[in-house]
Image (cartoon, rainbow, N blue to C red; front, top):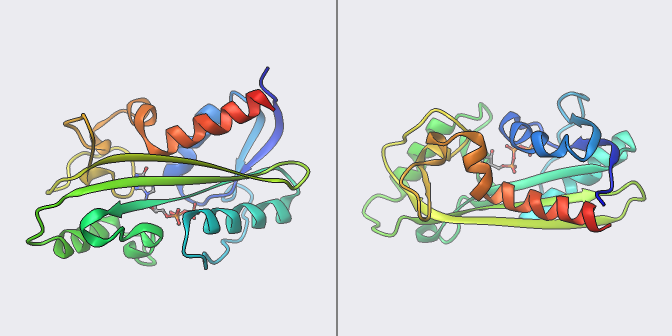
Length: 197
Ligand code: ITT
């Protein structure tokens, strides 16, 4: 039986993540609110790992609200760039969060490099009602294309083609991306955890 939560805070200010996470979470929570809805502060992400930064965000939201909190730290890791931008994926877009700029910057860095393989990674950090911490991970491998293609999704989606596909994430419907994405995989692990717990 799935353990239902009364209220869950999604410890993120990223609208794209909220859209992708909230749909499935609504099945297991009476109420799902985001850090933006609750006007929570945005803690500085000072760790050099997805897990470390996910925990910073989840702990901050749990502390501020007292509700169980789920944070997502994620990013694009490019093999030819030794895993960059990785935990710096959001920061490459600057304070204006301009991903056109970030994708152009990435394309410039990859000039002359034939290896276009990359993966997206998500680490979800969950802090339960008692304050216990749990980690769930998801990854999707794929290749980068240029020029960007597609209007859906967010962030680096217009340049990422998952393995076995011909379309970018930005050319897919949300449920199609969800079925194969890093975030979708991590979220299923979290839902399994609630089911078993
Ligand atoms: P929060 O910290 O408030 O959750 P953020 O956007 O700053 O929002 P991150 O620090 O985890 O989140 O940065 C992850 C970045 O990686 C995100 O801004 C996107 O640009 C990129 N990213 C993560 N998942 C992605 C996805 O599914 N599609 C495209 N880009 C993604």
